[in-house]
Amino acid sequence: MSEDYQPFRAPVAGGGLFGGQWRAGQQGGAPVLAIHGITASHLTWSWLADRLPHVRVIAPDLRGRARSNALPAPFGLRQHAADLVAVLDFLNVERAVVVGHSMGAFVAVWLAHLYPDRVDSLVLVDGGLPIPRDAGIDPLLILGPAAERLSQTFESEGAYLDFWRGHPAFQADWSSRVADFARYDLDGVAPSLHPSALLAAVAENVMELDGSDGYTEALAALAVPINFLRAPRGLLNEPAALYDDAAVAAWAAALPMTVQGVDDVNHYTIVMSESGADRVAQSVHVQIQKSERTPT
Image: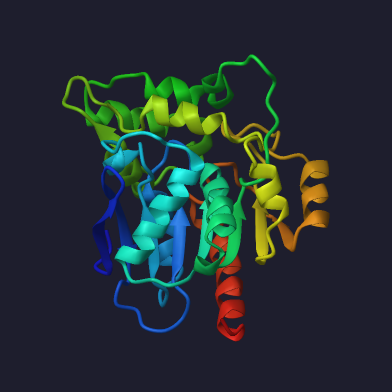
């Protein structure tokens, strides 16, 4: 980890929310609050943080994931948003440019809706737009291999690294940084190591991604500037994108939202690769510059 990185533990309901920040002492300019996906951790954002060398980047481990997996339920999207406000308060941050990946983009939307005075703008990375699901389907089936991974045990750190090295999303983008992400994700004691995300937390959040429980209305009511970045390939590097063209176009017409495609990445590598993080950083830079020109 770089020298300008430090971990934090912020008090939230039920205990402490863990995470990390880069350049905590950075003065001036809008800080960035970065929110990871449904089974990930704050190390999702180490690629991005390296590309914002003069920006304070704050990234939590969401409740039920990584070092925050001892926190109790509820694990819903609104609770995540409340936890993030507690993080901003703890770190003395009034407002931030908020970037969210996958489920983290849904959390970002709730944050902007429920606490609009804390959000300058949004960068939604392959997430945040409702994902319809068929009634009666086990929510964990929506995640497929990601949910299966959470139920597995691994006899050693090396075995878990081999799992990730063979993941279709990373076969062309394996790096020491992905390995660091995987090591951080491990919990338990060998030979019964396991991924850190709680199945109960993941299942609760999957059920919320279809736009129910007021989410669609909250998204539609947003007035904050939004940039939506879209990956052309899915979770397993399959050629089908998570969002189809029609759905993205419909939301772009309804919101103050610009849309950008990111070439040659999948749902993971849009943030967890050099080329994907380059594009995300470009978008974040634009939002930071806009926030600095706009009086609060």
